[in-house]
Length: 119
Image 1 (cartoon, rainbow, N blue to C red):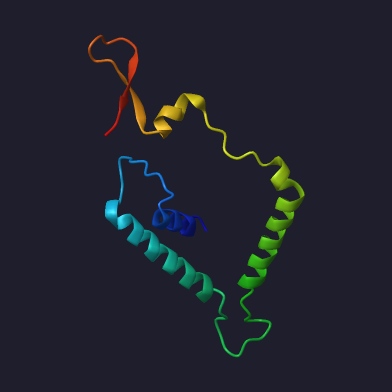
Image 2: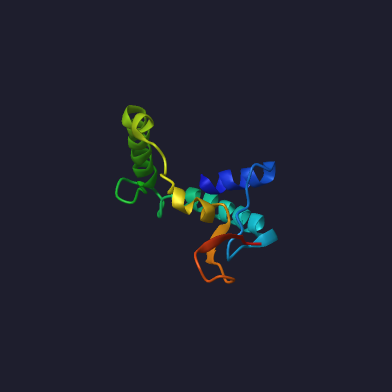
């Protein structure tokens, strides 16, 4: 799901690029698309039984397990999650780092630190 949302945000222009020390650049979207196709393929393939004909002993119960986990997740969200979930807590001291800035020492005076925007 996060991979699909990231791809849709990139294609619709609703994304902010936070440059870091490592980036795939123009290959990022292609890599995400390949990852999504692989994820969808494996999600379907892993649900097939390993032998034919299928009986209760060689049945692949992955679908049932995923269904139970999904049902529990939905029930938990409906009963307590949407009321109690607050999301990630962001430390105000690190907000500059999240916005692409870093605190580096002032080389002129050697004292304190100043805000330096990374390019």
